[in-house]
Length: 275
Ligand code: KIV
Image 1 (cartoon, rainbow, N blue to C red):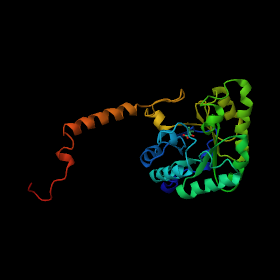
Image 2: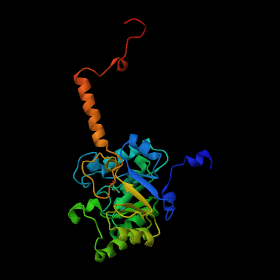
Image 3: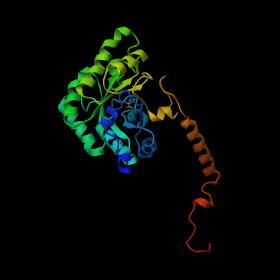
Image 4: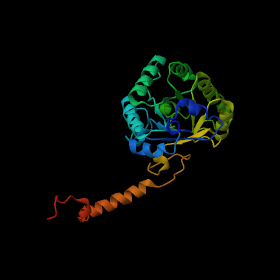
């Protein structure tokens, strides 16, 4: 493979082609520095609307705006070179009509340079997914627990734990696949249901609180780094960044208070040899 081919940024069709193949690795990022690190290890970087909760301390993703998504999407594009960057369409920016969805998606693609958008919803969004896909907007769908429906769902509750509830979730996944989504996130749904959907549909499924059988996995970066104060059951914490940051800040505050920082190595002396 030539260097130029190796360096090419992954695109939606590359991810679509991974159905049933090597697991797709996806994490969220909202900033250039974390994007730079993730880019070496992830196939997809998601600029998720979870940024509303993680960066802005909001209780849900509902108040997140298109402006917020565009700003952080740009930062992540600057920090990454290889991964496919997917930017969430926030609540209220795509549900009114397929035309509204196209206007919002076009703005995100133009102003961030990202390769795809993600939107929440299954059967009810299928027509919109088709409209966008036909007009050159790669769409990742998101079904199961859809956090933007927090008020309608009455909280963040896992879905499909009763077999009687499976049919609409399966229908959602089938609908977005048939409509032309290149992949679909399955969030917080019963494991056997996620596995069944993964077997059933032709596009890659990306699980979060779903199943190891999914074609890929995603987590919110700050959750898996141990920075978020509370995380759902499905999160595995790979480190404890919160306590590490706290220890560093405690040491810094003590150094400043006893004038141990800055030291001679951190200050600028005058040019020349003398004092
Ligand atoms: O906004 C987000 O971070 C997401 C993931 C949880 C999939 O949509």
